[in-house]
Length: 306
Image 1 (spheres, one colour):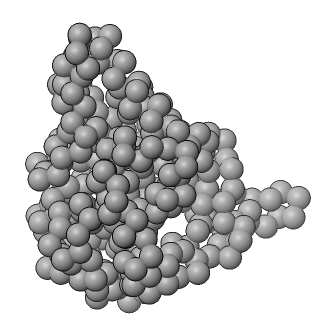
Image 2 (cartoon, rainbow, N blue to C red; image 1 turned 90 degrees about the vertical axis):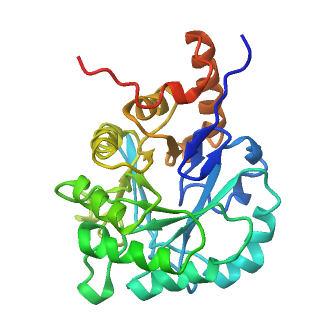
């Protein structure tokens, strides 16, 4: 049998395969370039970008947990100006999709970052992180409020000339409500889920193990939750969905694809094995060959409810 076709379509975007490296776990891509052939990936989502540089949170910022990890990095990054000068020219040499994850602490900041990327070549899409605290609303995350989520989406769309993917927070009562709100606001696609809020305590010192007290839980511990939320959202919206959450191998990725995700992002597993993304791509090829599947999109949304 000939090699299976792994190409997938997410709105107007075509990826050579459905495996993307998730934001915050792959740096700007360059950090992995000596280990991973980046041109083999479906795409890279670079670490969260703000308008101005951010030093991030004080250490300790990462704590290993059972089946996962907690992080409170504080969205450290170099800012949009330095990114465009120092990183983007290198990213433009890659033969893979580059998605820029953006965030702000008020609606104007989101719009300003999007505007800074407008007209810039070499960027396939913008992913909007709405799990950030809104400083104008007492620190409540944008993504927990459907109206705020929609307003952020509208502002980014107004200031952008690229496809806009909105990354949803799982820390809500019903993620479908937020998904529908940002879809109505014009989002081209959704990615989910971001991390679940959690904490860990040093029982000897009786203090939090993270300097910021709490952080985002990721890794295989959250995969069943992520899979369920992806399944729910796929049924609730008409726009494409990208699945994220504890994907460690190709069978994990298959679960999300079968549930209806058009692509997946691999995050925490990059810290465990930097070649996880490549291993998943090869695993998907092998699965398709074994099952006689010519195109990976035959799998997407193929779940049978018993």
